[in-house]
Amino acid sequence: MKTLIRIVATFLVIVFVFYFVFWVGGALIQGLARDHLPDPVVLIVSYVIAAATAAVAARYIWRQPNSPDGLVKDMIVGGLLVGGFGFCGGFFGPVLFAPEANQGPLLGLFIMGPLGLVLGIVGGAVYWILKKRRVPKSPQ
Image (tube, rainbow, N blue to C red; front, side, top):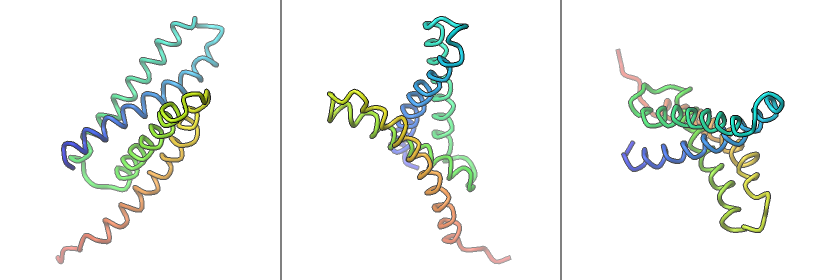
């Protein structure tokens, strides 16, 4: 994979994973720990968990060209990349094109991001199947 494509893919995965984990995970933490933790602590915990998860996903995407080929690898990479595109388009698109819509970013959080993730997983599996068919078997 070319370096520019790796940089763009890694950046998109960082943005997608960070925002998704921060907002969805933060809401779950807020709901579960409402009576036990003050709001600033919940915010800090949400940031730390989101940053750590984004770093792990970015490292995986950055190093994936060096890993051996496999179905699971192609499904994970496809899911993260297409899910990242879907989330960024659904989250930032309404903010840019319809700033008066107060629920615009929810499109990326609850529809475009998860739908892109599922489509990317399916697309990664199809890509793996097609790639496996293209590679000729070596005679033994």
